[in-house]
Image (cartoon, rainbow, N blue to C red; front, side):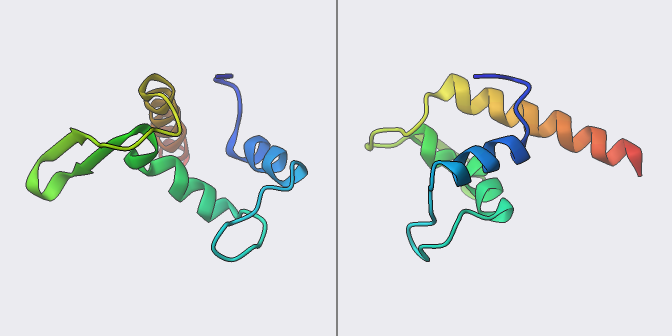
Length: 86
């Protein structure tokens, strides 16, 4: 994973490759991409914090846990930087 990739660069790459939202058939929007990047299920985990559940699912992950965790750390750092600018 390239830690320097921004959401804009990833979105542009997906658009250039013609990736579309499977539900609507439209190009992936920034909001949709952000939502995808937040979903633990893509790393093969089921997490429900309200009941303190964090377990491995019985499905094949789309992304390995190490990469998913790195994305979450990068998103947190990015969010922290934006918060400090306000």
